[in-house]
Image (cartoon, rainbow, N blue to C red; front, side):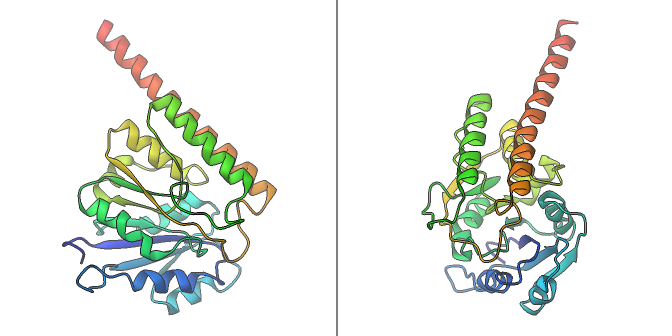
Amino acid sequence: MYKNKCIAVIIPAKDEAQAIKSVIKGLWTLNDAKGNHIIDDIVVCNNGSTDNTAEISQEAGARVVNQSKPGYGIACLTALAETQKADILLFIDGDNAFRALQALPLIDSIANGTDLAIGSRKLGSIEKHALSLPQRFGNWLASSLIRILWGEAVTDLGPFRAVSQEALQRLSMEDESYGWTIEMQIKAIQLGMTIEEHPVNTYRRLGKSKISGTIKGTIGAGIGILSMIARLRWRQLKQSFTKSDYTTA
């Protein structure tokens, strides 16, 4: 327990046999200032892997749930169904692009009352070739749109993040694909939640990316992110119009 908080880690993974053991081992070694282990549970969602990601994850001490339907969002939702007793939820990819030690500021932020803590790659250092040009451009575009439409300064849509269970329930996450991360951030803004960004370093992933590593994945991610921005903005405007009509009446 960390300040009497139960902490669970969610790792959506597809064909991450090269990296998943290192990610899980790093998480299990996280300690508080007194040297106590702070991670209580690690859940890997095996999202249709064709390699032995699931077996390696179990051997490393994680619980594994399977989800054959492809999609980052549905993988997260599937794992979250197994972590409803956790107070703090940490999300990290299974490709070794991030280091577990940098989860501590994210976890500490939530333990001290922040609703959502984002690991910002832009605020940290980025290893050469760790992020593709489409990824960099997509982050800049989406962050700019959030600033323009909601007036909130956002530097990254990074998947390395932490959220309180209470905040997560209020967010009512829906997206099953590429719009998951930006849905969480925009909804948190709309609900007036407290959000913090913390710098995290980004390293070249182990294995090939299923998103940025393919043209189909890159296009799909771009469409998913932009459509989520449009959907949430339209939903907000529609609600505003409805309230306005009700007040006038």
